[in-house]
Image 1 (cartoon, rainbow, N blue to C red):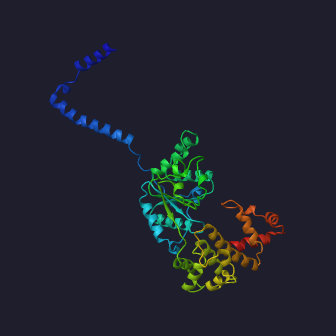
Image 2 (cartoon, one colour):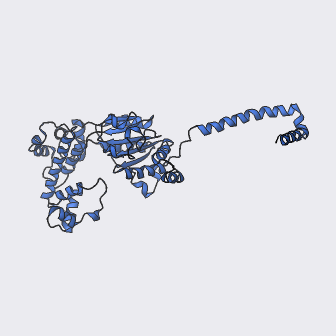
Length: 394
């Protein structure tokens, strides 16, 4: 080997071209090549060690895949969202600069968490963000939906297949792509069972599962779990309270503008505890042409017969989950009484039957006369079933 190297060196030195022996030519060439080689070496090292460039962001609005239709947010008219200006301003600031944080909009049921999240989605879409909406059902559905989000944000199919084959952790792959992608908003709605979010054995606050603060956009979760320990140190909790009398009255006026004055609307809103879900149910009831009570005052007087004994207070505390449930239940009972009086006696048992099903779309083909007859012990025809469905839909 030594002999071979010496032979090569001798060949190179003995047969060097004439121009290479000219120092006035070779030194300027060396002076140019030396810093160029150093610069290329530094650039190569930087490309190897630095963060990858942000992935190309696809706008949800431009995607026509049926698989992404289920990821679109519900439509909420922003001009009809009242009393949440401070919370939306806080979330908007976080959307612009997440800085390693994610948002948790939390409160008891019926307070309006979904409405606030949907209102932020409308603002984000207007500002050019890609928006993805996932309604929590179970860990398997969550993993499927988050995978679709990552694909929409540019995740190569080959990388996904490697993860599915077990070569990489799927949540790691998904969140690596989301961290490399900018200007998106991802909502996971109604994530109440935080112990089941997973993957299995992973706590939410450890940030090794499906909930992480590492995205290039903003993750927003809505949940009834208000404990900071659940969500970890990178979560910014946005607690929602019942609406003020003025804001709640405006919700009723928007829903039933011909049912009374602003003062009468506020009086009814206070009696309902400022609970948005109850306000919407009452607004829908008041606008039905066959409803027994058509004004704010008449409806409030109808409530007085039962609500004091049910709630034990003039102004119910809707932040208490049990109180909130009672308020909503009572407003629904009045509506179901009205449906029964209109000739839809099966509306109440049908609604209770549907409430036993999972929180997911229910195929209409599964709701049969035989199923409802088995639940009620009464004869049910297809016509009476369709009538009950129509009454609930209205």
